[in-house]
Image (cartoon, rainbow, N blue to C red; front, side):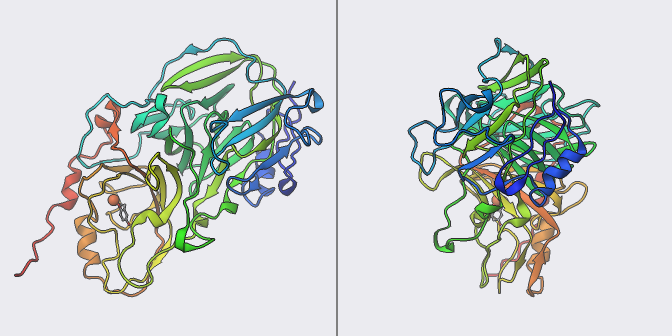
Length: 466
Ligand SMILES: O=C(O)Cc1cc(O)ccc1O
Ligand SMILES: [Fe+2]
């Protein structure tokens, strides 16, 4: 039965004292302190290893005839066995029961979750902007609070992406979620989340992001009353750090700032509902124990938390506004080299010093499709406040749809004095995808869809003199 409730990791050595189902604040705090705010092991893509009980991890082999401490060995493959080493992702889990020990899945209601292919509405070239989701009904957990805005591709082909928002005010009780369709990049905007994963505990607060790889099971508990945020679901190849090219060996998101959890397990023998998203639909199976029963693990198919404030922003120190690809945190390559299925891009605090330069984002038409969200404050191309681009809201500028600074921004920035300027009053991000985003019916008809977004580009004066 359940242990003492201790789930905190010992940090550097990758060992944690394990056991216990209680979500005690103490345990969370200890887990956080163990790694300077985030529970964990440092380094994106590393071969991490962690054991919650000393001796639980086999040495020198993955699958001994009998795994230590009576555990079962299980491999979780995030990429095909044969993919190149640089892309290969898999982990070995040492658990109380193998994941296979479960009865049949049964279909359950998808709620407000939708999946690819997105066919409820026609692809629409209009620029659209939404206000935040309304307050969730009391008792809404993270899973029930997921609300799909749109996406592209096909989950059965492992191609494309989906954009979800969430609003929740209750923990997932005796429910664990896993997604066969892709990985989930969770971007909290209001309130923090505690993620209890098969690999251990992660806490993600606004300004941080959590990355849950395909298939990894987890449960979410709000750290604050009502929580809100965004999710990029990536059906394609796992997110990786972008190449740095001439930037050099350092910069952008540094690998060591990605924190994986230390092992922590639940030893719980009572019915737990495992919700499994498969080809866009939710299925559930009643396990007779918690599947978060991994006592030790090693591998590189692991969840992470990353603090966006650690992003090393590169920019122009001469003239012109560089393309926002220099702000790429993570990229999911498609089958065409250098053309991402989806990029996660952050507009983090930075100095602007360009001479004789229009400093905010330029007017443009992009072959890629851009969904933008705002974690806090304002974005330097758009008016903030009611009716503008607000935290928790989002904008969609599909392939070749003309956009850029709104009129107010253009008027201000084209006449501003060009002294060095710190842009540090907000944190915006973009999910940028090579395929157009088709909205769900609920997003196309949402009450929070702003009327007449086109208006922000009206009244741009004619200045031409031949
Ligand atoms: O549309 C946007 O605001 C995103 C964006 C920012 C930028 O600095 C340059 C191009 C671009 O699409
Ligand atoms: Fe853009």
